[in-house]
Image 1 (cartoon, rainbow, N blue to C red):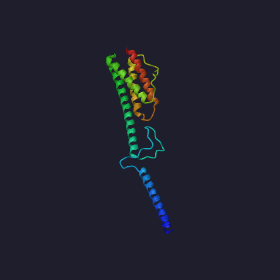
Image 2: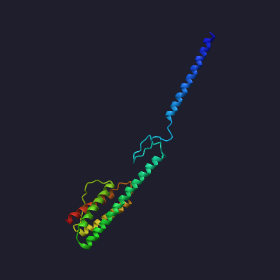
Image 3: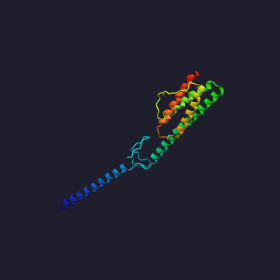
Length: 194
């Protein structure tokens, strides 16, 4: 009978040790699964799309988000600078066409190419400002080529000044309207030069 009690106590102690061992093993496995190796970065739980800001983003100061933001601002600035450079070239082309015609009193093939380039750049500026691809009709077109070229140079210079003053994130109706006037004048001059 004494042996039976010792065997029962031993069995009870063995069971307790085994349960504690299993609990310790499960806790170790659970901890190993929840921790990451040092070499791997933690995944970003919320993908960030350019142009969208999400107020529920809890990863505010992460280096990845800061770098994305800086790159996005840099790209927007680059596009804005390119658009201002286009407007500057449009203004220069308008002045050159006016001066060339005043000196020669006729259009050369180079002037025709300049008109095409001016129209292409103006369309790009209009599209960047939020305008559509449709051609707008311009009223009160001058009948004389010399007057039309002076007006073209003035409108081109005005477009450059508007683009330069307009902030990056603004859709400017004035820029779109000025670009439409310039495109109408260019098309009128191209038809008159034929």
